[in-house]
Length: 100
Length: 136
Image (cartoon, rainbow over all chains, first blue to last red; front, side, top):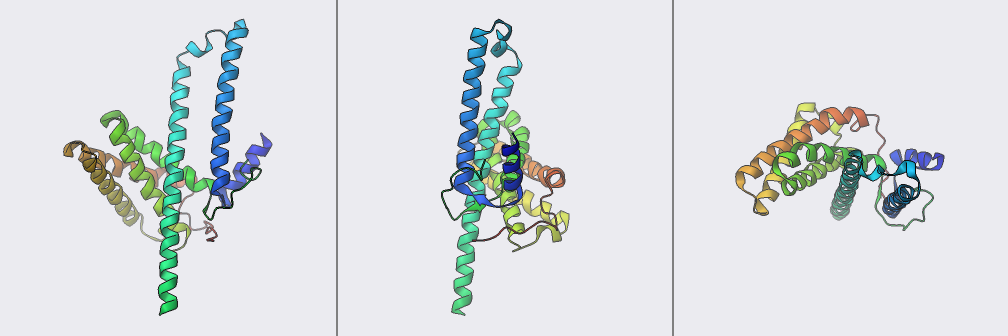
């Protein structure tokens, strides 16, 4: 938890590589899949956990998590696209200045 | 996690803060549009609002145009107008009825305004103290 918290707080303000963010995002999906499998196993094998996935809150949590990932992907794509356009603009402006 | 993972050495570098800013402004847009107009126009509105707010963030970050030094009304007008135009144009291009596209555009403009007015304070986006991202 400390590693994740410190990494997130560092990546919050300092620029990180796009590949690292994509890998971290894939890691989150992997963690969700493992948590889901663990939950289903617990429900099947431990009587106290039975009926957990039938609880009304369960689909709501699924829905929210799915939307969060979709929004994260849209934001990531938009950010990369905007940065790409800015980079191209920077190159064009620098070329014009050097020609002038 | 992002530091511990192997990097691919791409030229694009970004902060979690700007991605998170896009996520929260998109969440506002989806809450405003999708329940009223459905998923397709909801996603069109989300993409437009996210694109506009993220572009404003980037422009501010690179110091090309300090959004924090503008008047709030000017910022709101530009961001809301662009989000509305993008949503209306994309909705019409996708074959949605013009009335629904116009309504979605109005809701997208509202979502963009709410994002800037409310979320800007929570995430300290466009703050004058904000550090400019290193441009590689």
